[in-house]
Image (cartoon, rainbow, N blue to C red; front, side):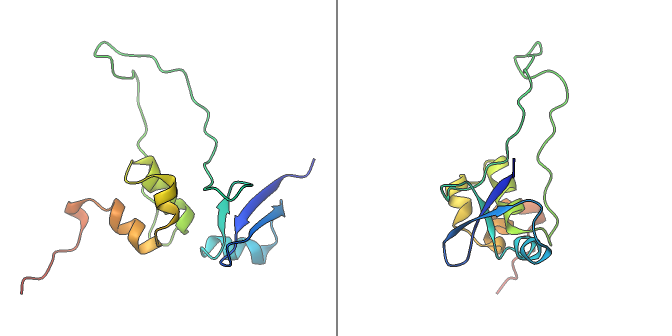
Length: 119
């Protein structure tokens, strides 16, 4: 069976592509020109296996819980969208409407923000 993934083009059209992707299409995706979406055009949510949560004595999950890893500055917009949603900075719908610069700003804690020059 051929695996399909879907992208939203800058024109707004949803396009189905078979894997493996052609190098040109992959480059467009990496540069943020194409946005991965679900078949109906809704934001793509990576499927994640959910492990059984075992509660510790305080009611919090026992064991190590990994925090989402902040994408590198050069990461594609889809990674920034996933990160923003994962840390609860916005919803998937809100993330889909933001630029990469807006997502970076939204997910940057105050202590990492550049100082505002005094006038």
